[in-house]
Image 1 (cartoon, rainbow, N blue to C red):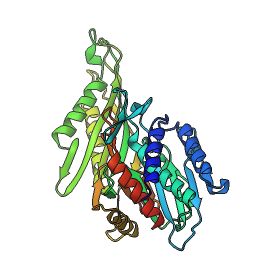
Image 2: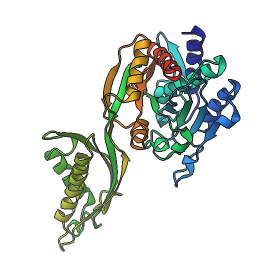
Image 3: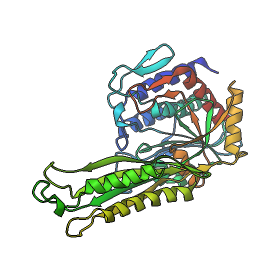
Length: 389
């Protein structure tokens, strides 16, 4: 493997991690990627953006970026992809090298290796092919937006711009030899608990406390095993009440509480059971808490599927190709299933079975985040092998 290729990749990832770009504000990092592609010789006609950022009220600065290259050799079209957005804790990141790791210089920020390391693997692969003229089959490079806020780039992007790839590889967190071949499905919900306000000192009995309703519901879910890690017979899943807001003062019986919850499972039917258990617990608690006049509370739910679960076949062509590439670079492939969501969830759900590989990110979404350069270099080698075959 060309030493200059790996050296350039390291410089590239450091630069990418220093560019701000949280979900919805990826414009600057996308501009940098396009600039690099053009300098390496990519033709304007092969570079496209889709309008995914304009599909609803969330908006955003820019859509997904696609580079589609015709093949110089015969073969199936291959897709290389990574999301470019980072989480808010990475704003202002200043990456520095310490030994075999890149870490944030400031102890109050994350690094953004999730997922600028994946972005760099895909970009360095494209640049090397463009600059060197290496023989390759038809290739599509795909950089997605808004992954961290619901996999929105992969879920709503215009996949018809990708050229119908038959092999697909996504780069995200973890070891370079780890292949995520399946992942859980996730459902999120907003819960609005309505009570009745009254003076907490003069006439508390006339009120209906929304806080009491929420507390009873959460206690029931905990007691019956529907909160946290959930095991019911052969079925496994998780749920969490992650946000609760409400109340104005201690002398007022709180009349409204807003909560945000999620449910996950690899089994979609069991995930629906978890959601139903949450809804039933809040509805029951709302009926139970009454004022002296017999007025009870209400619970309203607004939920949506974040991402559907998937499991690739053991002999899926992308799985087998990834294993061969890892082995050809001296690694031992590890098949894994994730309990988190990935762009691969929606890619696979939308008809493009996709394997996700890591590139050395550790402790992501924290101020302890770091990038293992040895794993990153291996990921770059594997990426180039996957693209050229």
